[in-house]
Length: 282
Ligand code: GUN
View 1 (tube, rainbow, N blue to C red):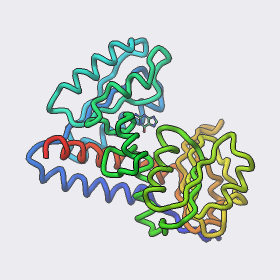
View 2 (view 1 turned 120 degrees about the vertical axis):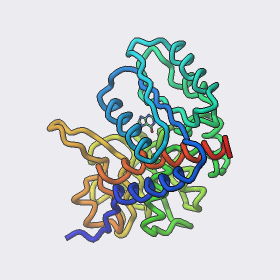
View 3 (view 1 turned 30 degrees about the horizontal axis):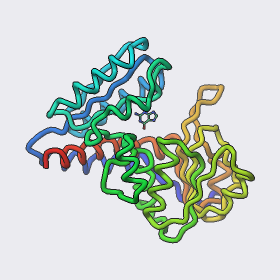
């Protein structure tokens, strides 16, 4: 059984990547992405390789810059300054997390906001908080909005609950849903009676990083359930923040994890790089 329509993030992402490749091929220049990784965090190694390959496959100029795990904050800031000053570079991404000797806020604020394809710089975050959706928007929440629109989930007036308040997902996700005329609640680890809060949601976005925390009985019948989670179980398998087998019996729409939001994050990074290039160079 299972009533929910499963949203195929891989397929939607492949279509978006193909569209970006077409637009890039029509340009008289190649938008250029530079991804910086500091150290050898295994998940970051995989994510950065995935982003680089996707960028090259879309016809972008892409390169990864790897600094050693013991690199100083000053070294990273020098690397960013060089890329900021290079007119051929359109997008700069510093993969998180960073080693403890480097302050992420200092690094994020050093990136030229016009090249900030993660959308984490306070100027871009502030524009989004002011209700402007025409700037550089964080890739994961941007990808979630693509999926909701692709699936035809009604947004205007809908009750949306965002589970998680991170800078990377929860906060910008809430801003985007608000800009789409949802009634938005941000719930988190300190929220009283999380299950009851979630059951009120017509759109539920789970971004808490706790394997299968959202159970079937947390979900309103017919709700759209978007699973941003990517958690490794003790046996090595990857799973989302939602107990998928239970949730799909109740939900109206659901994304699998893996295979839902993750591929959209990568596609939106390419979209942001193209948009940054167009804004910088016309
Ligand atoms: N680490 C986990 N997610 C992200 C992301 O979206 N961007 C960057 N730069 N690092 C991450």
